[in-house]
Length: 446
Image (cartoon, rainbow, N blue to C red):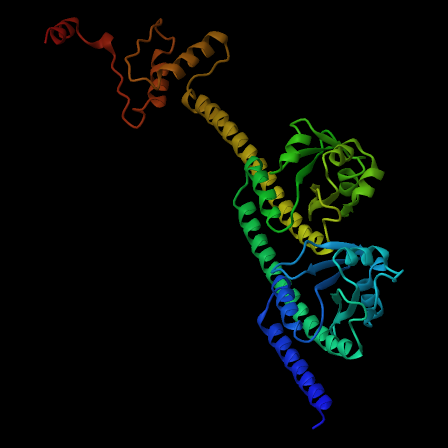
């Protein structure tokens, strides 16, 4: 056999073995941080490179988020570049491989090329990461040699990129499933916490801590509508920054362009740094000064009407992605129901207390009518005597009733009996004037 053909056959076998290893890698590795270092190690047997990169498109910010691997066991921190200023952005957009044979002479993608040259890269190969469902980003390999990547290399790496795209899609789907599961669990816990706590003072601290577990934030508050003053009363949640900005007297006018506008329109509003600066309200300006870069206000509404807004802020720019806002709307719906229940509970408690007071009043009135039903009169002296009857009747003490004959001493005695603890017993009257004097003397001596 021709030695050259034998060498090429062995090289092809090695490359196909590398592809099989990539397939195995796709099956057994579940996350991006695990995947790229292993991928780079196995690619070394079939491709020449010192630096590997994984570029993923961020649709919310429309940038390429780039991870670099430079021979160690971990990925670099994320580097973000605009789509139009990076080779991986071009590959992602056009969906075709790109080979930069010599970065020293390359005039395109200046920021990306400068970044690669700092890492010692001379030639660079970039391939699209695409599945049947989605364009994900690009896979890049960089070599310290010029012209390091030929057509055969690109063809092999294209197949590798297809496998990596599947692995990424699986990892992202798995991560999305786990995230959704966590959010549903959090919603359930939030619902349980909110529904079991009807006291607003204890309700507020629990809300922000639960939200932070799923959506990172540095500021959280509730603005609740007060009809009497026609304003929004602002309450700080579990947030040091909110505590600094809000005190017990903080209110937001209904015309205020952030929370007030969201309350009036009943529509969620998400602001980034530029939006906050453009609004120019005193509160938002102060938040900017303290480092808040993103702000999200969500209306709190029930079928009965609008209650206020849930307000969140973050020191990260573009912190509230659409999926986060969708989740926060569900949280806001739970909070609105809890607030409505808490208000109903407070109103019921106030009505119950009022009814108790009215009941006591009516009982006193009834006692006054029934216990003195045999006594008719509206004069001040008579009312004074009846008040004294009310005072002494509950006491276990002897009562001496004085008065002229015919003034109603027996009626007073009967009233005292009816209002005493002995009311279920018999009332025995005794006419002392009919008892012989000698009999009484003998009774006292005995």
